[in-house]
Length: 93
Image (cartoon, rainbow, N blue to C red; front, top):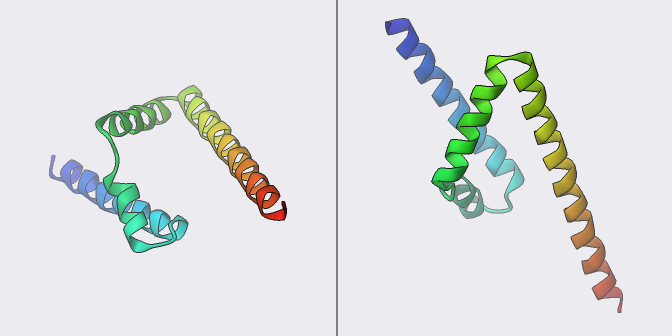
């Protein structure tokens, strides 16, 4: 039982550290990074928990979660490119 508590605590600390580093790397300012982490809603937290549970329970679940994350990344990149092109077009006019 003690080992379980230690492992869970260690995994939470590592996860939070990784989240902070990713937020700092992707944000322009320290305040923006903090807002990314602090601005999570209860729904977001529950969805992340559910996705992590699904991914760890079976290979099929891992495939579903990984596929959904890949699709979300592609969607976000496409939107980013659209915004950049619209901004460049507006500047050139």
